[in-house]
Image 1 (cartoon, rainbow, N blue to C red):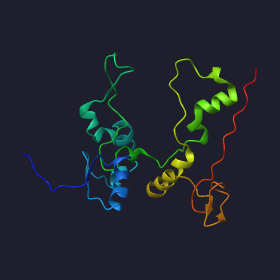
Image 2 (cartoon, rainbow, N blue to C red):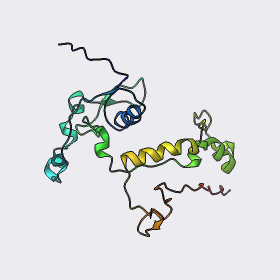
Image 3 (tube, helix red, strand yellow):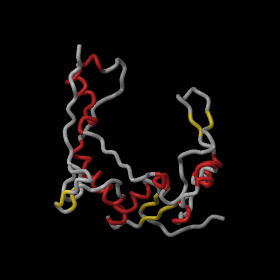
Length: 194
């Protein structure tokens, strides 16, 4: 049966690592946001340490829509589809695959935005394979870093803080800045030996 709902500014499909994070800034901007999620909410008891349920039976992957839809993969457009195994690291539920996140959030290094320029500078243009599609990004870390900071604050990252309000804790990352941001350093590449 079709149901007609009131109009909204934005409909977010899937409340995982992208859709779930996108909802907050949209709502803060004053938009009316509706989130649609195929999965359910999970409770703390769903994450109890249970080797039989979690490892042998494959929870939470076994309790999800993806196992009924059987995702497939192929190495290129002309190859036949190959079904993936029954335990797939996709999760349908509020939080999506962030339910497997473990709060590990890796930032790109300044060098990663200038792969062609930096590889050429350090090793020579011949080190870029012929026909490669790799190219420098049109912006650098300095433009992306405020967004890294916000996601890390809102979603959270793991690890012992090394600088809490200016108090250094040697057990943590001593390169942390007082406001919780990691101090970034320039990656120095070794020169190629002949």
